[in-house]
Image (tube, rainbow, N blue to C red; front, side):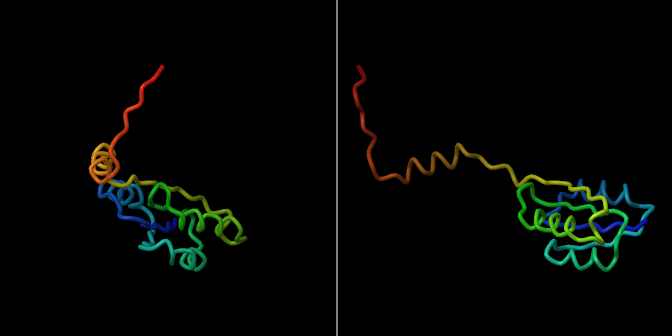
Length: 111
């Protein structure tokens, strides 16, 4: 069995290790860029494609659309492994915005 493993974003080490263990009995073709993987998939015609990418990655959506429209790759099963970006603290962002605003807060009386 041949698998194309596409590492779209920055892979999480745990996810990559799990993928490598799961595919140890297969021929694995690594592709580090989603932008270049379509040509590899067309050339190799793998039994499976595994894509590790950011949750909201536009390039992955384009790749999946191209594969679906192509007669050669439309029947290839695809497994997407979305990864989350680093946690973001919105409270800190709001505090920074609050300090950056130059307009004073206004107080209004309510009925």
